[in-house]
Amino acid sequence: MMSPGSTRTRRRFWVDPRFVIGLVLVATSIAGVSAIVAGSDRTTAVYTARHTLTVGDRLTKTDLVETRVRLGGAADLYLSPTVEPGLLVTQTILAGELVARSAVGAAAGELTTSVVVDVPGRLAARVVSGSVVDIWSARATGPGEYAPPTILVAQAVVVRIVIPTGIIAADNGQSVELLVPKANVADVLEAIMNGDALAIVPVNTPVVP
Image (cartoon, rainbow, N blue to C red; front, top):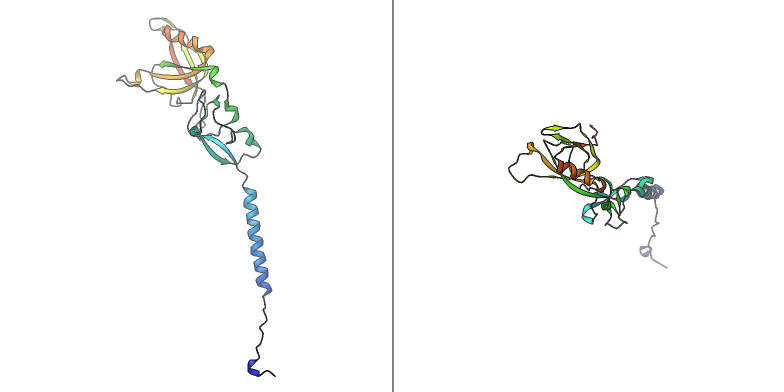
């Protein structure tokens, strides 16, 4: 016979049903949030321009920044990191702008070349590297006399503004390097050699917020 002092009472393990229900609700909530986050991350990795790219530039890794954006069904319209750099720019791409596939190609430099044009007076504030401009020309007909101006080259691209290194003031004129179709180079050089008055007029008008 066992003595009363040696008898041990076994404790029953009891779980509050409310505790179990709480654990299930927490686990379900975490799983739901994870599913929502995973489903909402529908961004696509594409390239944006690190700086302004002009027609004829050859793309390198240093020109591009990988960015994740929501594009939906338009993702195929933009350059993705799966495309190897080395393509040529066929349309001006501004700094921070998404690189559209239609703005790059393999033969941009075959049809265009750059020329430097001297323009009297000041340039419009919108004329900067990458700007699309029209080159206007007034043919010299005599000393200080010019014919009515006409468009010499349409849709030229500003490569850069040549900064004067001497003591000549900018008010006396500026030099601008422009990218023009090769078919128009002869006309531009003829206007320069003839002493015609040239002007650069920006084509694009920015939207004022």
